[in-house]
Image 1 (cartoon, rainbow, N blue to C red):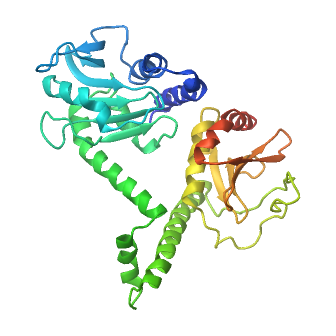
Image 2 (cartoon, rainbow, N blue to C red):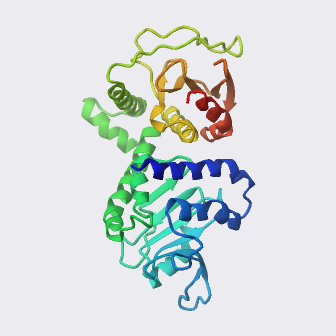
Image 3 (cartoon, rainbow, N blue to C red):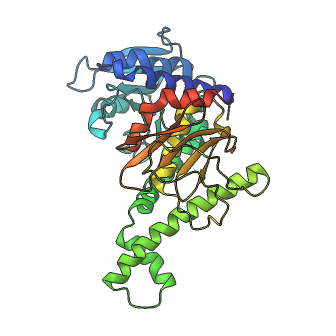
Length: 364
C-alpha cells in the first residue's frame, strides 16, 4: 500500500473532521470534500472538462435535462458517475435514482454515491448495464479499513483498469456483506448462529435456558477469539511476549476504580469487547494524521482498555473505560495525568480529536 496515497486519504479525513460542522448544503459538501477527493485522491483534474464534467447532462427517455453531479472520463468515454448528498445525510439506494437511469445510457461501469465522508461504489454484477442495488465497495474516510485502500487506488487516474476493478468487484461485494453479518452476529448472535455452535459442543437438549446460556457463551467466545488474534499479531510484531504493566495515574475522583496498582497477575480472563475494538479504531483514525498508524496499539486490562504509542506504557494515548453502564474516555495531559470524560456513544470520541492529536504529537 502506498504511504503517499494513504497520506492523501488521511489529509482529507482531517479536513472533514475540522470542517464538517460548518457545512450546511450539498453544494458546500461538493466544494469542500468531494472535489478534493476526485482531484487529490483519485487524481483527476476537476478543472479539465476532458477529465471531469460537473452537472453532467444526459437525456433519459422522457426525463430531459436531468443532471448528475460529476462524470469522470478517460479517453473521451464516461467511466464513472458520481452523485452527491450533503455531509451527514444517510446514503441509501433511494438516493441513487439518477445513477440508475444514467448508468443504463452511458458507457460508465462504475457509479459512486457519496456525502463527502462516506462513499458507496456500484457496478453491474447482477445484470449487464443495470446498476446493482448493493455496492461492491464502501468506505468511510473517518474510519478507514486499510485492507480496502488498494481497491480505492485502482480507481485513480494513473492506475485505472476497468477489467481489474470489475474482476475484484464481485469478491469485494460479498466479502463486505459477509463481514457485516459476522459483525452483527458477534455483537448480537441470532438463534440459528448460536444453535450452529451449541449443537457441535453440547450433547444435551437445546432448551430455552440452554440457548440463552449459549447466546452469552457464543458472544464471549467470539470476542475472546478476536482478542487472541490481535494479541498474536502484536506479539509477532514485537518479536516476543507482551508484558502487561501499567504506570500509576492519579484518578480524578475518590470513587473511581483504582488504576494505580501495577498489573502483574494473569490477564487471561480479560474480555475485549467489540465496543472497545471499535473505539480503538476510531482513536487510531483520529491520531494517524499525527503519528504513523503502525505505532498505535492497545492493551486490555480488567479495569480499562488502554491505547498506547509504540506499545509503551510510558506513552499513553488514552484509555477507554467501558466496563460500566456509563462509558468514559480517559484523556492525558502533559504530565500524563488522566481526566475521564463521560461519553454516550462511540461517535462522541470524535469530540476529543484535538486533545487526542495533541497527545499523540508529544511522542513524535
